[in-house]
Length: 197
Image (cartoon, rainbow, N blue to C red):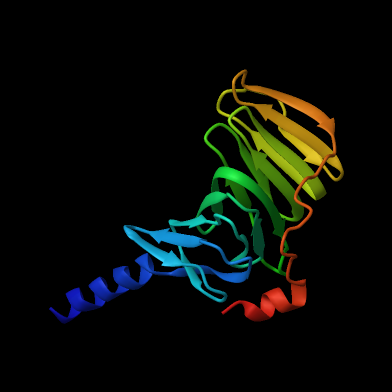
């Protein structure tokens, strides 16, 4: 019986493991987290759990996912966060991944039709009913889609733009044209690692 109690406590603590925190919120107007069936108003320093649905509404929100990913959400944006995966459902996001010495970070941001993978860099994504637009501020982003087979990975580099067309399932390279100019700003690398538990 004692052993069963330990096992139960282990699984309960695993299911409620903290994967990150809300860092900053601008124009706090209706932003909330949906956790299972509960809606929680977003507050600075609020802990995040795997599977949390984050909805910005009329706010802009900055999220830190451990160990080194920062996710900046524009207004009218919706994501679901996991430890190494951000599911992107609508809106505009900017993502910055910082490597920590001796630790490899592999961050994936995925919509229904296409995914973006990186270990270090800074990029933004805009999702509409027709397109998913990528603009890379810094680094190299690997793009893949189950609808498109390529012989070599599609890699988008610093100051390059890219569009995935959702109705035609095609990749299109274009000029760098970022649009998230008023994001809440990222936390500096030193401060970010201090915040980590």
